Length: 307
Image (cartoon, rainbow, N blue to C red):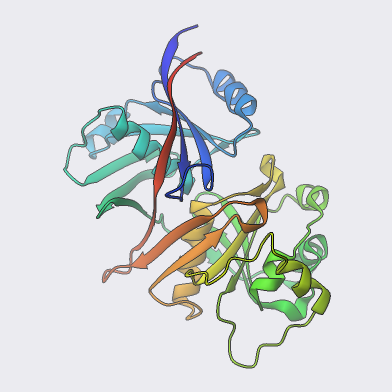
């Protein structure tokens, strides 16, 4: 076993322990797939990353480093909070990017650009593939979530590396009160992201009084919340019942919701409320149509791990 530099960071928060934690092994050289997966399962965090030198092709294209991303049950080609968290840890370790204020990460989906926006870093959302979902495929997912079709404003299959079923629903109360059947979602093999606008559209009605009452109990209500969208992510098929804050999902939601006119070209999303977290994701679209996903990162643990 080798002592390898290690950090644990909290992503999409400026306050430690209120975001989504990430384990970062800053030298994954020589580790096998099985060793990486074993360690990721041991951490029991939603993701663990392993930093490697870029491939020759990646280096020629400007990559600063390569990263492999694991959940406790599988490897992912891309994920958002590991992208921001790994960049923070790599810089904190004393590494210098090729271009000041910019980073290029090599991962399973190829090259992902990051840029510094003030004190905060943001990554370029990878290209999104999306499609409609049939009622036949949607119905069992709604049943597993405990949602009625009348509560769903729009639905899309979203794929920017990870695949998500995205649902825009009628109210924040509906989102916060969900109590999914995670075993059913795992059996369906479906990861689901559910979102609602903070300000419901004119004429929107609260359809379930008991649901609304539970959702706005003191433990989950945030007074004067400044964010524009409430998000929850259910990922039982990869071993995570509910993810605290999810960059890849927020990236694909933004690309979809902006394109279809459900959200403006710049907004912020809150995630993790029901889990006692306070994650905040900043989404913006530049003049070229590229969506950028930003958030704060806080270092929590720094040292070595024997692997």
